[in-house]
Image (cartoon, rainbow, N blue to C red; front, side, top):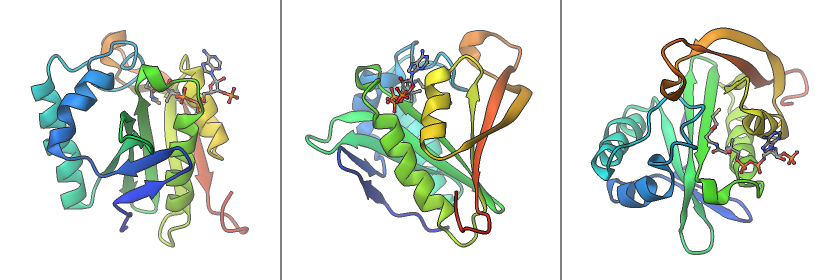
Length: 184
Ligand SMILES: CC(C)(COP(=O)(O)OP(=O)(O)OC[C@H]1O[C@@H](n2cnc3c(N)ncnc32)[C@H](O)[C@@H]1OP(=O)(O)O)[C@@H](O)C(=O)NCCC(=O)NCCS
């Protein structure tokens, strides 16, 4: 898979993150407990942890071709709005995203998810684009539906969410698959 370094939508620019994005990412969402309420990572205690995350996960992921992360920025001003990533394995690609609280409720996660999911399912070697969302994370479930995914079922005890304790959480599994009609 060879994803583009950048996607553009009417309101967003998705681009590869760099280590110097750490302070803006930390300030805008990585230190916010509301943002980490249903995700698999813990709130970052300082900007150094954010920088290490960019280096060890985002940059290493692109270098190895295993995880592709894009910083979600507002098209006007390059303001950091969040992050979205794509993790291809065999003929599947999993998508995940997070948005700064100041950007919620404006359809921006849907705009970012659509462009990435549309691109991924159009790749010849990808037959399934999928994602999970905590049973209580209704906003994320809506985003996945609006990105053209179908709610397939519940994966029980699937995701460890540090802010919710040590027992893995049940999640909804969503997917868009390539069928006879070539897409959704
Ligand atoms: C989930 C998240 C990405 C949504 O971002 P967003 O930009 O606000 O999403 P959108 O505006 O594109 O769409 C949200 C949809 O959920 C709906 N929604 C929001 N909160 C809701 C709630 N509590 N109950 C029901 N629906 C809700 C909105 O009305 C909208 O649907 P609509 O267009 O049909 O009205 C954002 O809240 C976030 O980053 N949360 C923290 C990280 C996270 O949970 N990431 C996903 C992990 S799976």
